[in-house]
Image 1: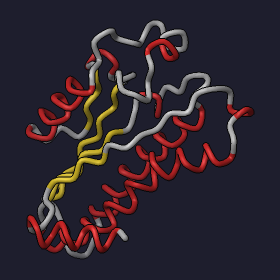
Image 2 (image 1 turned 60 degrees about the vertical axis):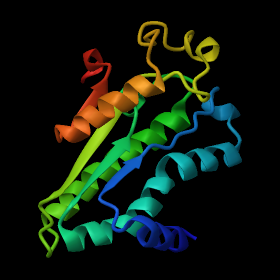
Image 3 (image 1 turned 90 degrees about the vertical axis):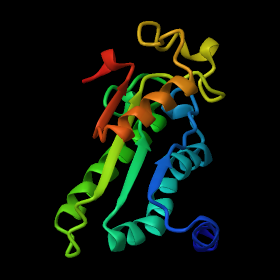
Length: 175
């Protein structure tokens, strides 16, 4: 399926030079009450989607020695909070995957020096997966009142343009 989609994209627009991996679901509640299907779905969406997209576009980026991969992780990848253990683990895995991939490319035989990575670490973004009524009691201090998806996207694009390796949103959340 992924090859069909990537072939269609190449036919319609040409080689992919910028990828923005931004996928996420966030089931909440104590880990021991999570259903196995929910845990698996969290990793499928939050982590494996990155694998499948990059396995399709990265070979061409390497051949062209050009590209930029923007990945949305989460501050919870480094500062996990209660009731989102699976989400935190999946985003921690995303962080590890991107860092490992950067290291692989440093020693790749093709020496693709013009492939850049930007990883975005937002706190809690007000989207359908982060209902403020549910999230505020879990994160009363770090839940900024105006963290919209548009604001985070703007910061991610600024970081991409300036070739930042890491972007923390808001900047005060930088580790």
